[in-house]
Amino acid sequence: MPSTPPERPVSRVLKAAVLVPLALAAGYVFLSLTLLSSHTDGFFAWRMSPVTATLLGGAYGGSCAMLAVAAREDRWVKVRVAVLASSLFMLLMLGALLLGRGETHLRGGALPAFLTAWIWLGVHLLAPVVGLLALGAQARVRGALPPRPPRLPWWVSAPMVADGTVLAVAGTVLYADPGPAARHWPWRAGQLDVRVIGAWCLVFGVALLLSRQEAELRRVRGGMAALVCTGGFGLLGLVRYADRVHWASPGAWLVVLVLCSLLGLGLSGVGVSALLDPPEITSAPPSAPVVRPA
Image (cartoon, rainbow, N blue to C red; front, side, top):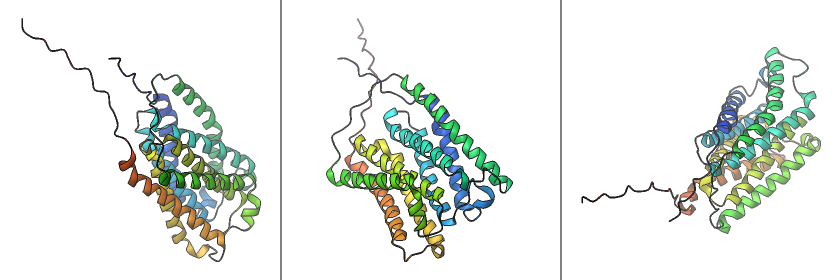
């Protein structure tokens, strides 16, 4: 009987150069924006409302959870959505920084904020180069790719497709032209704030659509953790700074709806993955031949 070829593993270069550093960086930004959300003018790359800070902090917290899960995996199929989503976000964030550089502390301000702005820009300029080299190392790793299982049931895939499409379209609009949305945002927000929120929406939308294509929830459990953390921390941030939100604006409730949707999708995915995912098949080592006495 022909032996099954080994499955493609995750490159050590990809783990060491991308997954682990990005997880640590996302965790740092999450703690900074969550604990010091009212002091971004003195320590962060640009000044933002505490509401925006907690929302972005929650998104980075979700990213940290996703990348931490991915860094523990050994199979490429279980990390490729996380890698692609993170790569897309780093490119979008670099574009947002360059387009909104006038709103950042690159030209001055408090010394910690000034240094952070330049470090922030430098990291996002370097990240695409490092990521491209790491993806090249991953492409050289040999191994088989297991076939995707049958399609997910419609009652699982339909919400993923619907939410993913809405988030991707909304994120694209906010990223491309943040001015009109910034003028009617339910709390104080600049164009850079709205463009970064749009980048997160676009990345979550693309990640949901890619996750649906995987057709096996076990492969995207890191992404489900990201949805839960982003939705949960975002809702807590709105409660924390409820007095700064203009609740008469429909946009405020739209933000609540999006966060509840992310939280619900993540929890639902965790709950049904054990029921829908096929059992993992691990190839057992060949048994030793039995030697019979003469």
